[in-house]
Length: 339
Image 1 (cartoon, rainbow, N blue to C red):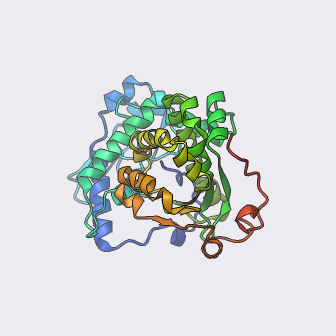
Image 2 (cartoon, one colour; image 1 turned 90 degrees about the horizontal axis):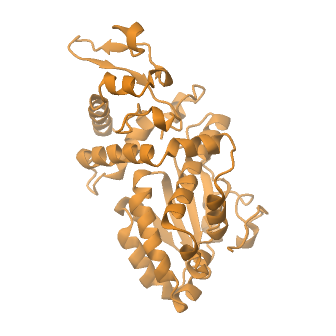
Image 3 (cartoon, rainbow, N blue to C red; image 1 turned 135 degrees about the vertical axis):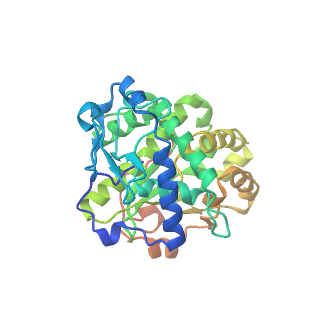
């Protein structure tokens, strides 16, 4: 969340998403509803966290010296509200029980898109419920501790490092649109039996590190390029999936994937621009249908499948220096086999 906050050098033309008037109106109403849901000031004061929030300079200030918040009134002077500046990280123990925090438009818009219907109409109620659940989830699972650790290059817990070796994924570089490129040996993970070697809680924390690293990478790229980046692209190699079907280990992995999608990934909507699954054999179609069944429909619609290595497609999306050598590119990055 808020991964673009505090980057004032971003090019305004590039950092603003081109959206239609209907989308602008919906976003404005959604933003207003979200800020209207802010917990009472007393709830922040009881958590002793007032000083941890930056405050915007409002047009009209009221009693700002006593509690650290500032207010602004709209042009009609009929509505006054607190104005808080969104931040990339906030100590989890400084948040109210609901996990509520100020959010930027980029984050709010992601949650709106997650529940947009096929006819283009936003399901704002579903998006609001998803957003509030995500905020509470982040506080409960101490996501901001993970963000802090990643951003400050602190080593994750030993079990997270072990999970990363058991489910191998790398950030290979950026695509032609400056989005982080992720390659994963998903087929090897299916066939390895590794899913049973760690607890569900350990896999969940490892997956949180994986997802929060997406935001860290996007933030770093945005800082370096001056262009807002709010999506990644993901490529999963299904080599080895046939073995997982033959030894039936794939059916032990799928419950874990379903749990991660439902319990964790649902709180991180709309961070993937598209998903490419390659080296997918025909025999894997049944397993793919099962997995697609529990994916978010918006996410599922972004998936494309290839039976081999789609080098031509890779080249359309990224430079040869990003594509790992084993797939026909020139990237000799460390891309280990799955343990």
